[in-house]
Image (cartoon, rainbow, N blue to C red; front, top):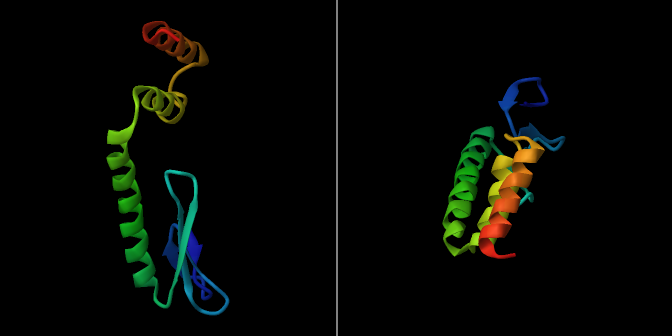
Length: 102
């Protein structure tokens, strides 16, 4: 959690710089760090909330353009890799390759 120069909690992703301005930042779905500076902490909070929402919404809309191969890779790496064993992942990959003829 970020803090102001006086020690007040500002929230996750918001910090106060030495010049008195507030910095709001987060990591997007693509892995890029997005950062913006503000004069007031309320403006930083509002921007951070809206930017995170847009990032999620933008990634959902981009799924319509995905191929099945791209979706499978995304599903394995981003969703399943964190929740199942490596042997299950291997089984998923083997089945997919067999079904797709690769």
